[in-house]
Amino acid sequence: MKWYIAFLLGFSLLNGILPAQNLPPVVQITSVQVDEPAQTVTVHYDLSDPEGDACTVRFGISLDGGETFLAQNGQWSGDLGSDQAPGPQKSITWVWDNIPDIHQTVVRVSAEDGHVPDIQAMVDQVDSLRLIQWLQTIAVPRHHSAHTGNLQVVRDTIYVTLEALPFQTTMQPVFYQGSNFPNILSRQPGLEDEAATIIVDGHYDGVTGSPGADDNASSVAAMLEIARVLAPYQFRKSIRYIGFAFEEQGLIGSQAYVQSGIKPWEQVDGVLNMEMIGYYSDVPNSQELPFGFGTLFPEAVQTINANENRGDFITIVGNQSSQPLIDIYEQACDMYVPGLKYIPLTVPGNGQIAPDLRRSDHAKFWDAGYQALMLTDGANFRNKNYHTPGDSIATLDIGFMTRVTRATLAAAALLAQPVQAGIDVFALSDLVGVHHHQAFPCSVKVYPNPARDKLEVRIGHCAGESITVRLMSLDGREWLMTTLRPDRDVQAFSFPLSPLQAGVYMLVLDDGHSSHSERVTLEH
Image 1 (cartoon, rainbow, N blue to C red):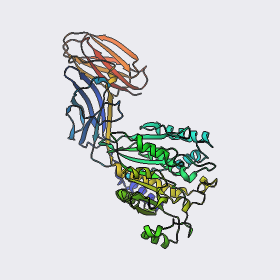
Image 2: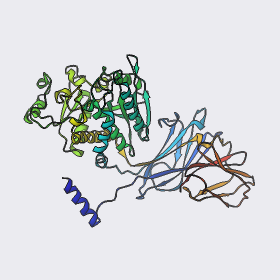
Image 3: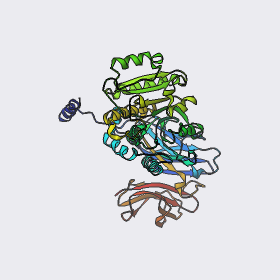
Image 4: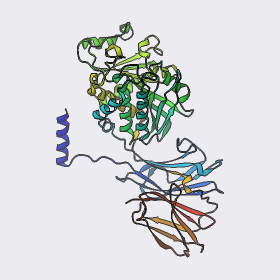
């Protein structure tokens, strides 16, 4: 199959018929003005789209420092909504209501062009070599008392990897017998239905004396790879990536998360819990089944028996309430990873009738009424190295693990709903404490922006006041200050930028009574 795909790709390139990939729109907030007496914020932005598509533009405000854009305070109007043509000098005016300090607010402008990103392209980016690299770090004996140092290294690896992505990454303390190892929580905020959240997780602890390559380094590596691949994309819903602590001690970490880690505004729409996804065998009779399995799942047992009880499939375990998730995961396998065999199991109630299917973190979500899946290779019913020193990387099938990672990524993407979008945000605190008590008395145009060697500022229609101009970096340092005396005609002033480092700056114009601020991007 690989050679056939390569042939088609080469043929398409040679004949010039390979379709160009649609690129997302670009939003750039160019300036923001705050009028406190009128309780208005005016956001100016430029909108471009490589294909010239009309876009749906949305405006959002955050009252919690940019963690969420769920606030519905006040009203906004202007160049937003559907069918917004690309172009410069667009604006949105927000009239706020009852905000004690408007300068602690963050505003966001986003634009969607109506195209849907290709999930197959995401799936194809899953890299087996990266999975192996993470396994090499994670698959070491790691236990809260017997192998504390290794567990700390694994914890830090997960945190640093997720924190380096454009996510919101935190730790939730979890305590067990005097030890504190946290749940590691990383959030990729959604653009449209942000409260709705899809969880992708795996537990990162292990048992004493075992490298735990399959249990559960395989799932942690998959979770990190899924986060890496999905990081550049935008989704309607939010995705949380979680490394759970103390699973081996009785699902302690997931219980703590379900009880106190879910935000009050957060709506968990589905959980994809990976529990051992790397062991594979196509040897007949390599797959065993729990006692009573045939009574509960006769069709699954018939399928497994017909395949001579080979352990060459992933098991998709959900309770009855989670049937929609099972359906989505099957769809992900069929559409994007057709080479992956799977067996779906729908457990009655919350699984108490089949305790072997409650042996991972998904069970705490079931008990709390959330939809959740356990994705597993069968643990000790297939992998005889389970909880032994033999659970090493060498025993894993990296190809199988890669296929499961791809299917889980595809399911997460289907659930979170990818969108082709551009975003820009602006923290009103970046206005460096400037308050707009009245409208700025001059017209102002700043160009080019982004700038390189110099910046041109056109000022006109002034009332004769002198204007102080400051160029400041976002850490508050002042790099340029001068005083201008423009008249009523439009005048252009030029400022050299070549000595400055590339980055984002604020150009602040102040006449002593009011001010005007523009964000300037400097490129070299």
